[in-house]
Length: 132
Image (cartoon, rainbow, N blue to C red; front, side):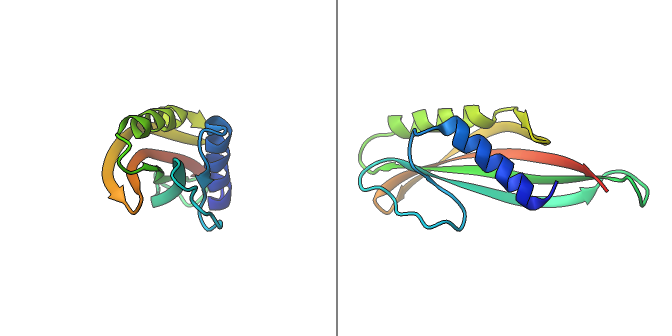
């Protein structure tokens, strides 16, 4: 699987499962956050790729990374909305397998105020295996 195919598979899963819960900002796509309303940003970070088996041909290569859903809710509105959106984002990827990608258990991090918003991140470690 190419890096582009990996990114597309993750974006498609999130977009289809998230539906219209909030607007979604994607990597390198113009986006204007809504005024005084919740929104999310989807990021995919590859950590490493290593050969897992011996041999020059038909070797298994594992690519690992992290899917990050950054959740932004209006500041001074309490934490319930962000916690609910975090639960929903986590459920989309929790221990799921799709398009050759295997996700692990998500974890939530509260980052606090970021400009006019309260920010919570949901991070999900994942891997994919390819044979070259």
